[in-house]
Image 1 (cartoon, one colour):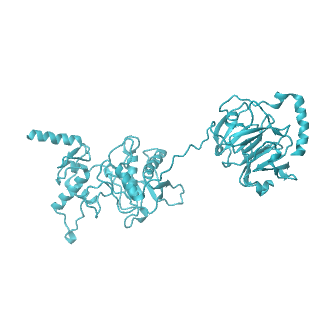
Image 2 (cartoon, one colour):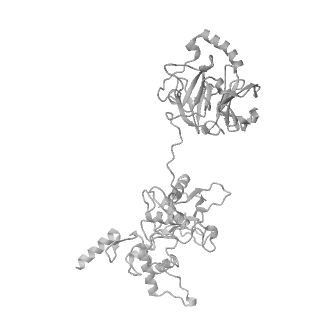
Length: 532
């Protein structure tokens, strides 16, 4: 019988847990067998430091009895998941004193240690749901960018699980709610770092203690410990950051070993995530996370339902189609390169432009219009803007214009908005509205109201865009181009973006009709100049 009992004890010790009286396993803290166990006097100091035992005061006759000592040891054993023997000479309990851990106490004066706590609140919390943080310095053990990413990931784990929004504070003049620092020894608070091993870090609860109000929420890592990420040799910075930030947000230590708020360092945890107890605790303080519907990818797809904001050919004979934050470069043989981000190619130009046109002579400037403002570029080189359209001598009613282009046939500049269009002459860079305008768009026979874009392509034809369709214009006949086999309007994505027919070619007028028709077109342009 004695042999059988011994085997059971050995098996329990190897497996890392003991069983309670009701037969259920009690998860416990493992101890490095190479650690030198503490002395009983060190155990006493440990119990006082971490809240299991009140400090004696011999001046007023307050002493610690052996009964108090053993009762405190039982509390400590209960918190660690050990069998509650109260034995002050227990090797595992003495070895636990040397275990790496958080520097905050496990129990406070109001804690009832007889109750096995799951998630626990310290008692204070932030009275707002938007917080800021800043990393004040870095450890030399890890590359700075990796430290930044690790802290950001730890912050994100708590904010994603709750109603909190926590952002990094980049303004050096601003005071963040939470400051994180790597420290050594005495560093300006009453909790000096203890060097390698032992306490790895400490944090301050949201409202701070007496005399610690300015430190509320702050985290101090002991920089004499060696830190690592992704399972490297050293203390895992991610686990430690998540744990300490839990304190910064108002969570206390829990007895539950699977919780990230367990006081003892567990070593590297692959694919670290919050335990259900951690999530329940943070949500009890700050509520559930906002449920945000998945957002579609803002990058437009070339073959999607393309609706252009503007289309323009610049002085270098390159043609660009704009939509939202992006643009495509249209190839001469059809098809497009893109989408590309506007801000990466046109410095200072805003997204969601209204219209664009290029004045080919004398400088080849391209003017972009948005709301009541304009920008000037030569190709992609910034020249001027944003400035008010009044500087172009445009009336206020042309704010939020639909489309604009310079018609090569007569050199005039046209602006389209709603059901009307305006014509301007350009002299020495200044625009002058011609008499008799604005007029109804019906003059452009077949062109619909409320167009999105217009431009003149390299074949000499004008093209009008509305929604996901476009119209080719017969400038000679002053009407939409007729094509019985493939009538207009046609699909923008298929014919301009190259989605269905990437090899589509838009042939120059000269190649299609020859010299004589071009002479006739030139003569017709004189009439068009007067008519339009």
